[in-house]
Length: 241
Image: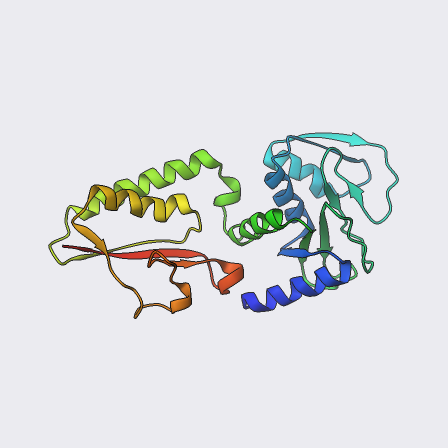
């Protein structure tokens, strides 16, 4: 399935519910998980009459769970947050402003799909971050399961690899530094650090190698899934003078 199809689906659901943005994921439980991680929530308070997966989710991501008595209809708030579990809500223009509203799609619910979920929001920053998390979330142990310290460790490791490999490059030889990350710390920051300490390496043009719309102002290949409809990636070509 292309990214374009996913975007059309998100836009259609957002329009139906009356939200500005929508982020597609693979289940309502995972949409709630991404929202909890995005907000760095430490504790949730949820109704006793909810889904078993919510209790498992608290255990999975290591946060406290407290039960409450609440006879909810259509949706409920995770107390102390702006996150709403709206797994059974299906009503036009029902989005509640300034919330992260989590939806569910599967064969027993209103939108009869095999499996799916979505996050509704009117916050541009939340949309951008949650969109990134949703794409990376397709694979285990990347971005949304890492913190800033992990990213620093990874970039330091990448620098060591790049500096080590450069020792074996002959004059007029080329290094291609490439990642499947969209984190600047692991991409341009690594290249910039290398070039500052290795003046005998220069960036080479990649105009003839990749689509021009994927080349940024620094002459690097840099893609962002929602914009470019492909996986996120980064690459530069450097020649030894």
